[in-house]
Each structure stands twice: as structure tokens, then as C-alpha cells.
Length: 129
Image 1: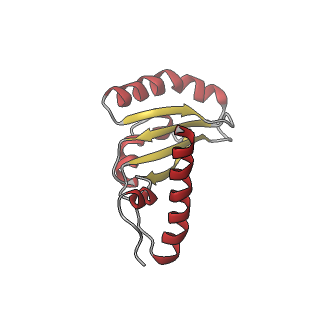
Image 2: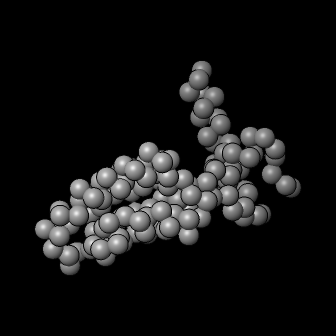
């Protein structure tokens, strides 16, 4: 029974997303920013390993201050992914610019602002006709 209800909700959200996308685009408010760190290929690994103790301490400090919500290793082994509690890419950049790997130009970040799944609005109100 629960699976049927969840399946019906998922189908409704997908249908609403398609319909909504044809009529109007709503940009969700940014509630977090995903930051993808990539270690620079041309940098000697010994330099990276030397910076890692400082990098780890700085990262833990940001986590304990509530600036990093989650962190993950990248599946390709080239770095990490942080979910930052930031309302903009500029705010996220200000956080990550404090990290030793960035200060020493051993790595770089790409940013992706994320927010609420907007099609869920259709569970509360129908789309415009």
C-alpha cells in the first residue's frame, strides 16, 4: 500500500514537472551550495600530502562551525564534494578560499547552488491552466 502511494506521488510530481516546465520556470532559492574540489593534476603529490594535515584540520573546523553540512569523497578519486551551508556561490567561495589547498593553488573548486525541489509545490496547489 505504501509503495503504491509513493509511486503515485512520484508519478504526479514527474507529470507536474513536465507540465510546469512548459509553462513557467521557477528558480528555487539557494539553500546550500555543492562545492566540487579537484586536485590540480600538474601538482606534485608530495606537496599535496604535506598540506593535508592543515587541510583536514581546516575542513573539520568548518564542519564544526556549521559551514560544511556534508562531505564526500569523489567517486573518481580526484578530490572531495562539500555541501556548504551557503546562500550563494560567492558565500561558498568565501568559505572554501580559506582552505590550505586553495591558498597554495594545489586544487580548485566548481560550485553548484541547490535548493528545494520546486515541483513538490504541485502537492500543495495545482499548476496554472
